[in-house]
Amino acid sequence: MPELPDELTPAIGYIRVSMLREEAISPELQRSAIQDWARRTGHRIVDWVEDLDKTGRNFRRRIMGVIERVESGEVKAIAVWKYSRFGRTRTGVSANLARVEKAGGQLISATEQLDARTAIGRFQRGMIMEFNAFESDRAGEQWMETHQWRRDHGLPAMGRPRFGYIWHQRRRFQPDGTVILQEERYEPDAVLQDVVAQLYTRYIAGEPFHSLALWLNDEGHRTVRDEFWTGKAVKRYTDSGFAAGYLRFHLKTCPEGSFPHECENYELTRHPTLHHPAIISDDTWRQYQDRRDFTKGAAPRARTASYPLTGLVRCGICENSARRSVGRKKGHVRYVCLARAEKGGHACPGTGVRAEVIETAARDVLAQFVEEIEGAASREGAAVPEQRHHDANVRRRTKLEETVSKLERSISRHMRVYAMAEEDDSDGALEKEYLATLRELRAEKSAATKELAKLRDEAEDGGAASKELAAVVVAKGLLAEWDTLPSDRMNVLLRRVVARIVLKPGNQAINRPGGG
Image (cartoon, rainbow, N blue to C red; front, side, top):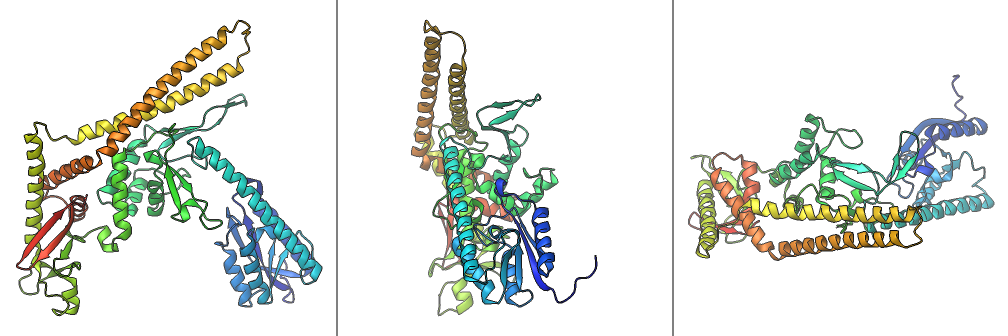
């Protein structure tokens, strides 16, 4: 290709492919139209910038870099296939177009011929952009209606594969090319459900997200898009709650054009029909949330602790945090008041306590806690419940949730078969049989639903007992493996049963249970 003369006006070709399928105009088509426009009008495309699979409802795109290049004087024009490629939001388009024109640049559509330097041209462009915004709003309203329908029927807003599940789509294609409509649902994958459960238990035990991503990749597991896992991807997946039977829905109060994984403005809901049974138990989900709440507010070093007592020790006088300090002469490890260490004795008269004293005190308090709980149960003539009984209760609820879901599908299939029946029913026999079967199915569903509600109520009423049970189990495990547990693992477990460790003058440490 011969070199273009320098007197041609430099421009940047901008290509955007929307996430909406009906707008997925190929980049090649857009590029060809822009090149034809440049040859016709004496422009030189000095660079191409692409935003693939990006919405036009916000400007969190590479187009912002193009606008900055216009403002710097590098180019004088931005060429797009249609004005809608620049954006579809009223305020965003107006503000960023004003930046371009203030810098002496132009936004030019290769296929919408008008001269925006004239009054009529600016009017025409404004009408086109307003229509683009209207089309975006209309499509958004339709998506909201679709999402609400799916939500009401216990399905995620976007129908797509989910890690750990087999997706049974509504439309099933047969080998002969025919299509069969079926009830959409998600079924736990027998191979991957154990992997999903391990993701949660390993995170609860203190393993960070980036380590979990490496583990998944080493084991040969990929995302549903057949990509390698990253720590961010693992966090987004586990936070969604899908494996716990929840659906995550974006709230309407979110900023325009934002998506659920981009902000914290969402809600988790559970549909009674439960078209996707939970893989993890409610107890595991609560423990995961507790761990996430801690890591969100904790200092970076406390998220993966280097020492067993990281983030737990506080001064009993000024209530500031205590810092780990190693003595220069004797080499003793002590925890000292942070205010005193940084500001001196005038800020706080508190002293330090040796780490071994604190750990011994923590061990003694845990042993006393376990002894008191077991002693109280023994005096009442009952054994301390084991974790397996709690897990059995959780499994029973999960089983009932699956039963309710199956009965819902059976009722739906039964009604569909009756509606499509072609045999003669002049004597009403078919209708009687249909109604009798329908009553039986609904009675079974009602009984299962009542039992499930009873179990959930019992779980809520016994929340304190469940926490106490979990604390006893964790405390006993800590005592049994005190000398072998790594520091980060011990720190995570201590946080579940100990709220804080308070330092008192005289080389004493007072433990206050209740962290879990």
